[in-house]
Length: 417
Figure (cartoon, rainbow, N blue to C red):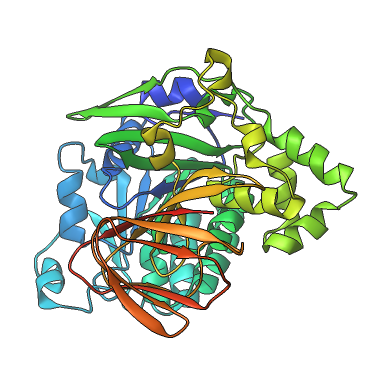
């Protein structure tokens, strides 16, 4: 397959470049500056005299053109505007852009809620283009916001992704990973060829590959720091850590229990193909999916996490290691697992403002919860109490429990059982 540059040398070396046909999903934490990856991809395409088709659901034409003004080439750029009449609601602030003549090729979709008509328009544009035209879909999340649910977005993606693959192009798809369910993201990983995770921890920026079809170098699946200097990105490895062959160990545990991939997938509401890709080390599971699989198989996640044993520090759990792995519990509540096995578990739970949890943290008879910061209400067996930093709850019985943050600040809890 033909190799296509991302426009970032460090990234090309890390993943062996993109291949023609790659659909590239970028899972992005809110607030992380991901646009620099798009800008370099567009710049590289212009340098190679390749067409860019930019499909916008989340940004106005004014905003998009401003973001590429220093690299802009009107002869090789087509903007498909689904924002102005979509999330922009034809507001005059956005619509006035069309009051003046424009020397670039812009296609304004008058009714982006009509998915069939939008798809038809997009296909007609694709059919008129020369080979190797490249695509940027600025927001799968914006599509979901406009179209109302994940199923419509997923159906569009499952139609468009194979079509773009057959066109031998490279297409970028951006999504806010906290705005989508685990099942939606797992299904996307099954269909697409490349998935990246971009996130921020303690003011440091990280990129990590989640899936890379056809590549055999596993280095890209480790977190890599990246730094932005103007239009340039530097990607560098962290301290090398011992690798763990998670896929083969999970497969060994599953076959030992005589459970099929489908039976395991049904237990955790994922697809058999996802389990297959994990077992064959084609993708790296999210922390949430990994813990679900371990729970379904009745195995200790700690078997896979032996990084500290070789230097004699099996007792040490670094804070950045805990914070680098985050799972979404429900209602916007985030969980950072500290330890988890069949005998003991501990996790950091973060409640944003106006979030509620109507259950216990664990499925065991006893659990201890300590309030690290903030104020939160807890109702146990119908009795409500207001807790502040330093307070704790020790549940010895399987009472119904509700946690509710109605204060002005984020609340952090340490939950242990």
